[in-house]
Length: 239
Image (tube, rainbow, N blue to C red; front, side, top):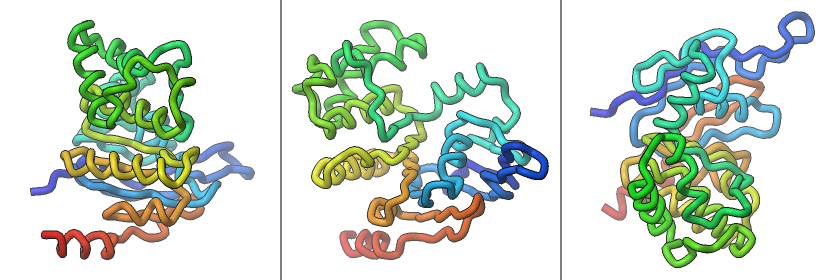
């Protein structure tokens, strides 16, 4: 039986309360199940980035509740949110956010240090993650010695090394050419096939169409939430 991973109940995020207030999120209700591959799509200013920050425990709502694995995380303090992010969520951003003077394996190890994982175990997890994204042969290379696609793969390895249940990918192909974009999307699909919950945030319909469920956001509200019949049908044919 499918388990609910994420549940948003009547979530609002209001900036500048009063007559000039901006409702970045306006009474959002949403459920995401464990093991889903979901795309959240919206143009600039639609509220999708605010929603991503909410899902990633980077921000808290003005009102409403957010349950992650059944725990209400909507009113936690910064240090408590940080602990949840560290344990539950792997982030992949458009800018790769790699440390220039560290090589690939050291970049992947960084979040594991914050989790208190010992040196040997850390190195093992980092190497496994780099091998998973096809970079076993580039572990000693620094970001400046890699292409954009390879840097993004290091960023993905960093996000998955601690085996978090949720992967949150914010415009993960935004800085990449089409060939590298395909590679990155395939890695995300493979992670999903391996049991991770993957949430893709994008403004691009072509990227959103790679997901099994597409949620469209407009003016801080969910405009539509649908299963992607094209992908689901092709999956049935493969079976």
